[in-house]
Length: 428
Image (cartoon, rainbow, N blue to C red; front, side, top):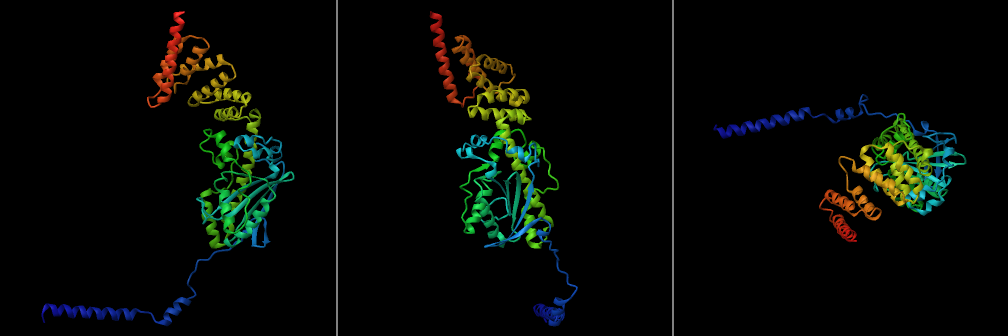
């Protein structure tokens, strides 16, 4: 037997052996059935704890099905931040239309406003994102009520949207925080997909994010609602959950039916709405009466001063700039001095403006050419000291970067004019 035949025989024998071993190990039908029916087989078990047993509320029947709605009522003396709910009604609401530049808010009345906040299955939005909770806050008489619509299952979405739709009909204004870009478009999309009419886009939306940025940008590390809540209003939440956890908590609830984790989202949403109420009061108070609001940081006074100036309220702007200059750090002081000096100039207090410009010249590292240009104008037009004006023009030209061609050209034209005035004056 040659090598080739021996290898063929070994290969054939190995195959037979393998097949016989596999047949020997293959379980019978009876064994397979017994394995499937074996009582000790363990399955993952979930304890169902209905959300309605943890959160006070009611299951409401609508033409679209069932929906769960919780409700909590707060007395007029409830304080969330620096003001009670009753005090918020006493603050004039005219700042809203100035801050948002929207004439519709001249008629703003908090009793006609719905405070709205959603919790969703995703933070990016889109047609695949559901608003599984819609929080609605509103004044009813002298009390503040928060209702929360909660989808215990996706099938309850239409019923929840119907309840939202009915509630919206009772209000003329919305109050949100970043709702213009997130909550309102998301809810409108869900309404459209559910073939429901929506008035969300039509309602004037007082989105608190934008006035908050105008007033407090730079005062705190960011202008997120939770940051303003803790740093500005002085409120610390207890046993709260991060926003980024909320979608996964809802998915877990859908899978298990266990409401013991998701019930914390009700607290999170309720706090967001109460903070919006406190924040809207703070925004209106700090604009209407900065002294009563007692801004805590120089940057707040600086921001308010610029807002007042833009809105033509010079008698409010200048005191804000003066207080800001006393409270701000060196990094901001240069900008504050620029605004304050120009405010003095506009109202005819030129000598006070000049003293600020000269003070800015004492800084070891001037940030820009502003005081030199203003002093050049001062000595040209008020003192007619053309030699001194030329000195400040040259200093300004030395500071301006070469890429700012327009400013350089204007200064060169001013220099040429000053040289002509100087020559004419000396020739007299």
